[in-house]
Amino acid sequence: MNDIIPPPSPEWETIRYCLPRSLVTGILWSALMLRRRSFVRDARAALAGLQPPLEVAGGENVPARGPLLVACNHYNRPGFDAWWLALAISAAVGARRAPGIDPEVRWVMTAAWTFPESRWKRRFLTPLTKWAFRRVAQVYDFVPMPAMPPDPGEVEERARAVLETVRLARRGFSIGLAPEGMDTPGELGEPPAGAGRFLALLVEAGLAILPVGASERAGRLRVSFGPAFVPPIPLAREERDRAVSRQVMEAIARQLP
Image (cartoon, rainbow, N blue to C red; front, side):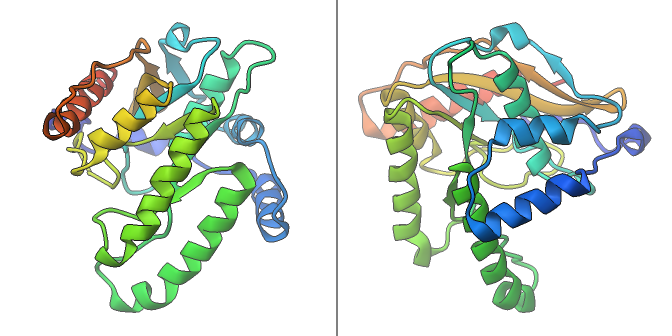
């Protein structure tokens, strides 16, 4: 599954990623005041100014009803911020849900930026981003998860995040996540150990997996949806992690160029 995403090309320069100033101001104010917001509504506002506009493929594969586990690749490159993945996918999913069905996707997001290359940034910026991301998570009902690779000191925090995500799934909410859990520039990465068991817990809680591939093609951002499915889950614990991860990542890979 390596080398799925092509290397950098000049066509990326034609894509303008810019959040409206009024939207940024509104989100910051809501985060400070802890006022709830609709992520789907904010996603639509953000994408309204995207040039060229978002391309959606396979939209007919998004179920109109039923809770979903939206699983996407952790697409990234210099100049592309990860929140555009969540914005694009949430807007596309929300547009295809039936009236009266909750259109929101509750994303499992990073709890903080860790800056492994800089001790100074880890000391000062990591705590700041942890505070800010927690506020954003409260605004949108997201789940902050400690970043990969895992820090031994964050075992309890990670366990709480897993339990909170499963709780949301059991309540019938749709969940969004990137199984890779971290940036893997230029390729589709291998999920970390335990990702398959986490996915299995969410499937057992009642979620169908909706695979999504995100990429940039022909000078525009593109999200492609595959058919929703429920993977068979091996009974043996030692087989479950690898088997479920492989099924989900192969489904995502089929949606990439």
